[in-house]
Image (cartoon, rainbow, N blue to C red):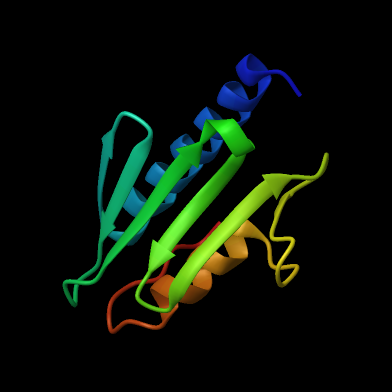
Length: 101
């Protein structure tokens, strides 16, 4: 995949996450390639685009996760998880509203 294609795909991911955050009442701030989610309990989840590896990275209290496009979904080579499922999981572990996709 070209860098331009990766950027288009990852832009759509950021848009989808922002829309889900808005619907859940979660504060989301996009600054360049970094999207910061602030949950009700003060926890912050960072989602960023890592262009050199063509991955989207998530940093949460529960750990760091890397996702690459496999042609059909953003998946982790480490544990097979899917990006949107992992975001739902890490936000559901708080007292506030979880992201829903």
